Length: 397
Image (tube, rainbow, N blue to C red; front, top):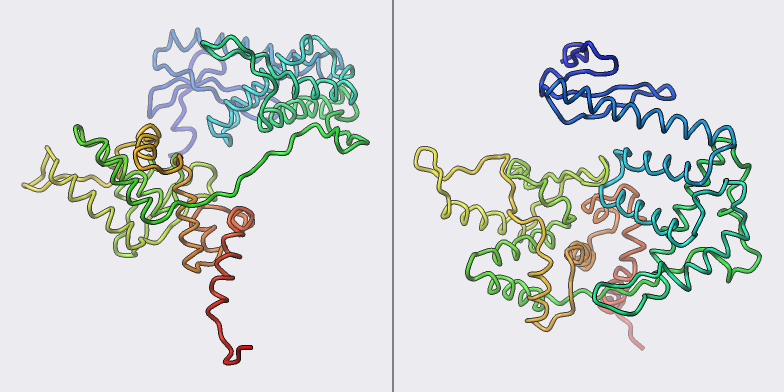
């Protein structure tokens, strides 16, 4: 269907109606690009009121951008621009948007008065002082029920705040308000680096027997309502497919290509994470068991047969961390998260001598295996040494 037949003009400028859904949308051209806003209503009078609200926001943003470009803007103006561009970025996941907005608030809280400063007042020395203060004092957050204030912040939290300040001042540089970004200035002493080193621990995968005990404990945890079984199958699915927990709700029965022995996965991060993975033995068996269970519990039938639509989700749960925690505690296994089952998948594949570029494709990476090599390279080295011990050239000394 063409754009002309999809959109219906109204008597109000910048207000259009989608013929298919009946919803009203606002449309403006900003800096040569069209900006669409879903007004989330099919009532014309409500749409007009919401259009006015959105138009006021657009005008305030235009004034803010103009002020920054003219050199009269403040860090507060940059923050408003940054917040608007972040929340409207369709390439970012909701969790990433939330994390950036939290980091923005931490910059505001740990640098009192920064919103009123002009970008030119933010020097490399001032940034250094803020970073040291932030690392040592943190945000003065007091946990609920606690009388003590948390000192400092995690490396990840500090680094996100530093990145946020850099992005804010990048906007000022791009608009000519300042000539260079002070956050990007390298300190003379390496000890004065703005960012903290994130400590990573070597992940040790649970044994096969531990994983089986964990699944059994999860199933026993849900003996009353059967949700323990669903939780166990969710974790099995991630361990046998390598799917991210955010991808699980997107996988339907229509994605199972039984004839080709593969499963289509719609990636949640980018289009490049869309992929096909083989129906590994355990994965195929798991899917067949789920089908049998669905058939036994089916209420609606077609011609006497249980109805399972291609659009039906394979897994009924989207997450089950509390069940995992209880099962780990009951089994005496170190705590695991949803993402650990994805790690488990990659580990088992590498231990089975699957090359890292192939594992990377199964995981939905688009870097040819660079990230997988960085994350799991030590496993390949260990596996290589264990296999090398089996090699003999007929002569031992």
